[in-house]
Amino acid sequence: MNGENSWTRRNVLRTSGVVAGVSTMAGCIGGSGTSDDDAAYTVSMPPVGEVEFDSVPKKWAANNGSWADMGIALGQEPPEALYLASRYHTQYYDDIPGVSVDKSDMTSLWEGELNPEEFLELSESVDLFVNDPNFILGRTDSWAQEDIDRIEATGTPFFGNNIFSTGYGWHDYDYLSLYEAFEKLAQVFQETERYEAFASLHDEFQSNVTDIVPPESQRPSVAIMWATESDMGSFSPYLIGEGTSFKQWRDLKVTDAFANTDVRDFHNTRGSVDYETLLEIDPEIILFRGQESKTAEEFQNAIVSQMKNDSVASELTAVQNGDVYRGGPLYQGPITNLVVTERAAKQIYDIEVDLYDRTEVSDIVNGDY
Figure 1 (cartoon, rainbow, N blue to C red):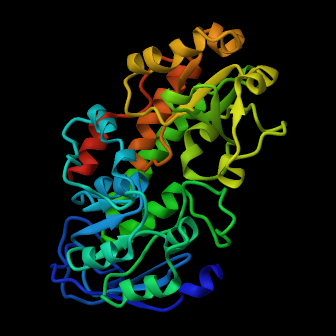
Figure 2 (figure 1 turned 90 degrees about the vertical axis):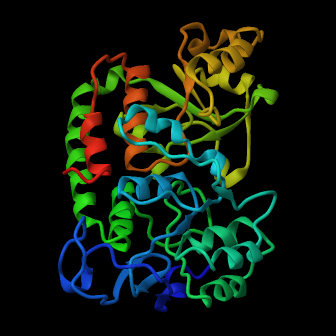
C-alpha cells in the first residue's frame, strides 16, 4: 500500500437525501437542527483523505460493529450491510433502555469472499461505505485498486480507517483512537453535538474507571485469545495493542501475559498457542474472544467445562480460580465500549458499582440531551 497519499483525491457523494444537520463548512455544529442550505462539506480521514459530501448520508454500509455502533450512538439507522454481521453484537444494547437494533435483514458482505460486484450493486442503494479500502485490498487477493475506483465512480465513496487492530503490516498510515474516529463519523453525519455529549459522558466514565483500578502490583496478568468450541486446545493469541479492540483492557491497566514471551500476535503471524504453552506462562486471567454470542452461563458450559476436564488445562491458575471469561468483541464503538469495559471491570476487579449512567446513554442516542 502507498498509505494516505493514495487517497487524497476528493470524492463526491451522490444522494437524494435531505440534509439533516448543519453544514460543517458553515462553521456550525450538527445535531437535531436542519441546515440553512444544501452546501457541500468535506471530512478528512486517513487513508481516504478529503471526502466531499453534497448532503448528509442516509443509507450506509460499514466494515464492522465498531462503525455500526458509532452510527447508532449518533442517532442513525443501522447500516444496510457489514463485513460480518454476525460480529456486530447487538445484545449489548439490552443494557441501554430505549436502544435496540434489529440486524435480521442486515447483509454480510463476507460470505467466503468479498465480491466487488456486490459492492457495485450495493452502491445503488447506499450513500456511503464506511470501510477502509486498504483493509479490503489487504484481506483478499481477488481485489485490485481498479475495483475500488470502479465502485467510487458510482458516486458512493469509501470513508474509514482500520482502527480495531494495529497488527496489519499494510496499515502504514495514522491510526485513530475510538473517539477520534467517532468524531470523524459525527462530522459525516453532521451530528457533532451528539458526539460532544458522548465525549463528555466518556470523560466521566474514564474518571470512574480510573478510580477503581488498583495499584500496579495488584493488577492481574491476562491472556487474550480467540477460541472455538470445536477446537479447544489451540488458540489464536492477541497481544494488547493500541487498536480499539483492546481499549477496555488498556483503560483497566491489566498486564499482558504474552508481552514478555515468545508468543506473537495472531494478526501478524497467524500463529497459535496450546495448553502447554499457556501452562508455562500461567496467566492469572484467561479471556476468550469469539464467544460474545454466548451468555456467561453458556460460555461456562461450552468452553470452561472443557478446560476443567482437560488434564493440562485444569492445572492453569485461571481455571482453578474460576477466572476464565469472555474476552470482549473485536469491534467496539462508544456504546459497546461502555458495556464491555464495565463488564470487564466487574470480572477482574470484582466491583459492584455501575460505571456509567445507562439512561444518559439512552438520552443521547434518542436526541434528549
